[in-house]
Length: 267
Image (tube, rainbow, N blue to C red):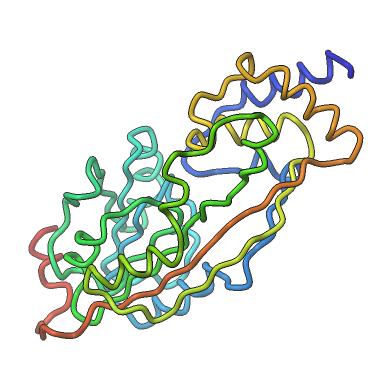
């Protein structure tokens, strides 16, 4: 192993800042296969027929701002405070209101306000999702499954999240239905993931802090150096990406004259 090369790659990863939800620094350094469904296209198709949209956990607003023909009442929430100014700078010129969330169980949003609530890899509380959806409204979420990149934990001998087995598509479908929503679609896939250099691994673990909560280069140096040598020999560190998709509808048990009237009065 060349210590200089290892140190250089690691230091580059540590020095590079992360803003919003922009993973462009990992382009060509990390590969993750896309699931058979296209989350972007699914969302794009659905917003054609709605008047109000909420993007939960918008990050820096990168995904939401890239969509075409957004409905007239489009909102975004974000729980990570440093992302709020980033998201506001990008989204507010587009007429999109950004709302900071402190507690998933108490969203600062009106009831029965949204035709469509989208959520990509963000936490949520199902009672609140049910509350803010209008009757007939749709909740669409793509989530990271429990087997996501567990190979990193295994190779580095880092403990897995203790509640890893309590989060699954089957269990979440049950929870969605118990919250009063009707499942319209559900899919799940295990996908190829590859890290092409040790810097990509360090950067990923720095950003995805919940993968290994106590991660530090010094704390895992011996294993990281071994992983560096492994990548040099085989060209990549191979892992598994785990994704699932749920689309659910709030039953039309209440008829509202204007599906987003509460949004108008609230805004």
